[in-house]
Every structure is written in C-alpha cells, then in structure tokens.
Length: 156
Image (cartoon, rainbow, N blue to C red; front, side, top):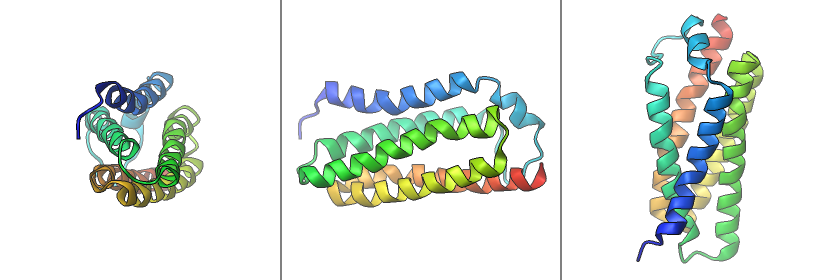
C-alpha cells in the first residue's frame, strides 16, 4: 500500500493539535501535579508530555490505517466516530482535572473516555489490525491514568 502523505499528515496532526490545545489551556498543570499527593507508581512529571506525544502520533497512525483500509465505509465511519469521541473526551479531561480540580468528575470522565477508546480499539481492529494494535498503548496509558486519577482523588 502506497502512503498518502497528505492524509497521513492530517491524521497525525489532528490528535497532536487536540493534545497541544489542551496543554495550552492547562499550561500550569505540572506545577499543580507536583503539589498533589500521588499514589504509588506515579511517574515523574516530565514523562507525561513525552508519553502523550508518542501516543498522539500512534493514534494518528492508527486512524490513518483505518481510514485508508479496505474495510466497509460503515465500519470505518463507526471506528473513526468512536475515535473522534475519545479525542473530545481526551481534550476535556485535563481541563476538568487541572483547571477545575474536579478529581472525581475527571475520573468519571476518564472512565467514559476509556469505554470510548475500548470501542475504538475493537472497531479499529476489525477495520485494520495494525490500526487496532497501534491504539492499544492509548488504552493502556488511559487505564494507568485512571489509577492515578482515582488515587489523587482519594489522597487529595
């Protein structure tokens, strides 16, 4: 399969833009994160932007594979709809957590986001195996983020 660089660029740029805009809105978030009581296994603050950048790139690649796959249009539409909804929730979570400091609401939001990501992974997998596999780190990281979020809620 020949790469369509324009579609690939758009697919990767979209989640990076969502994450970048969210980071801009929550620009002082790492200072707040440093001041919070955190559960065991909490990574250092510098890991979050690096991990999310990698995840956004993988998500973009995954969406490109699904979009350009030979799967039926209806299946691709469903897969990409779940993905888009997960990006909307992904955008909103840091605002709830960092800007509004609503840790329980952020955890519930994250749980809904996790369900959307799981649905996207299942649909991506059915459309394109590579696309589905590339979404698994996103699901795993958000699972870990749920642990951290709930721990922070309990400790703060």
